[in-house]
Length: 200
Image 1 (cartoon, rainbow, N blue to C red):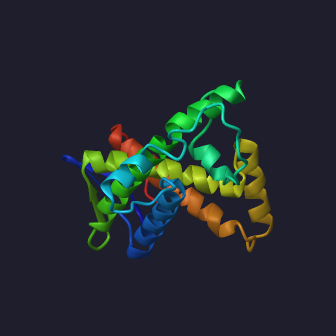
Image 2: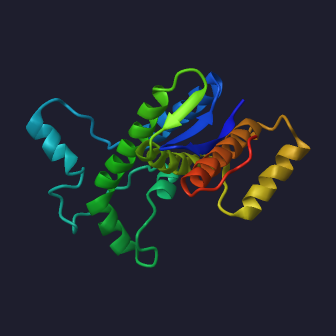
C-alpha cells in the first residue's frame, strides 16, 4: 500500500507496491508518448538536426494554415500563450511548441528512469528526480483531467456525484487513478516544501 513522500536526509522517500509503481510509470509513458515531438529520430545527424527545429522550420508565418486534427489534451498540456489574440497565439505556438514538447518529454523520461530504478516498494529520489517527477505528475494529471472533462471544481463535483450514484460507472477507475495521482503529487510537493502529508 502506498505511503506518502517524506524527506529523509538528502532523499525523498515513499512506498509504492509494484502494481502502484507500474501504474504510475505506465501513465507517465502514455503522457510522454502524447507529448513527444512528432518527428522520430532517424540516426542521420543532419536530418535529425533539421527535425529538431520543428515541423514549421522554414515555413513562412504567412503560409496558409492546414487544418490538422489535434488531441484536446495537448491544449491543456501546451496552452496558448496569448488567449486574447489567436494569431499571436498561433505564431508563438509555431515557434515554440516543438521545443516545449521535447523539454516536457525529457522531464517525464527522467522521472520514468528514476522510478525504474526502484527495487521492491521503497522509492528513493534525489532532489533532481523528485522535481522531475513532480512536473511529470502535473502533466499526467492534466491529461487525465482532460479525459475526464475536469475543468473546474463543479466538474469534479459532478463526476463525484455520478460515480457515487453509479459505482460501476465506466469513469470510476479513471477518477480513482486521478485521485491517487493527486495525493501522490501533493505528498511529493509537501515533502519538497518541508510539509508532511498523511498516508492513504
